[in-house]
Amino acid sequence: MKLSTHKLTILALFTTIALGLYWVESLLPVPVPIPGIKLGLANIVTLIILKNFSIREAFPVLMIRILITTFLFSQFISMFYSLSGGILCMLSMHLIHRLLKGHFLFLTGVFGALFHNLGQLCVAMLLTSSLAPLTYLPFLILSGIITGLFTGLCAHYAQKYLGRFLHSQSIQ
Figure 1 (cartoon, rainbow, N blue to C red):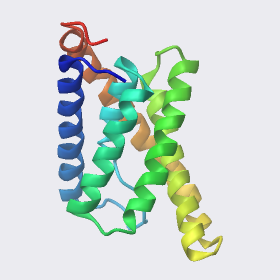
Figure 2 (cartoon, helix red, strand yellow; figure 1 turned 90 degrees about the vertical axis):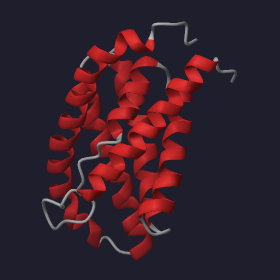
Figure 3 (tube, one colour; figure 1 turned 45 degrees about the horizontal axis):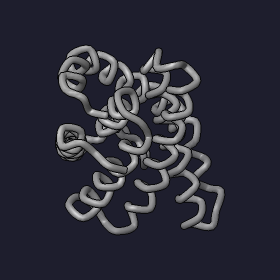
């Protein structure tokens, strides 16, 4: 895939923004003592990239963000949770975004958060060789709906301001 300098620069900026959002989120206190519940602020960036580009551009940004945040902010084992959740999240957002023809970004965010939680639950069950992590499922569904709605709405409103910037030059 050949990228224009403008497009590559924008994707690098989005990667940096995603890293910054992840860092800010890591400073916030966890609102509930349930593993896996987070706001998922970096998903705002994934939503914006999927809206303005494609999954081909979103995937490397996601992978770079996960690798860097793993090395800077967490333990190696958390990379498995991040990868499974992040990839399922992005794939589901891509599919929902296409099904909804780019409308209702907030619903796309909700599905992304739900599938992110599902991916993390699957890793937890594999690592523990137990179905015990499923006891968190109701809480993760509720939190996924709330946080996904929040990130989807953030991406929707950010899109209003970023649209002209992203398309000011040919990025194809």
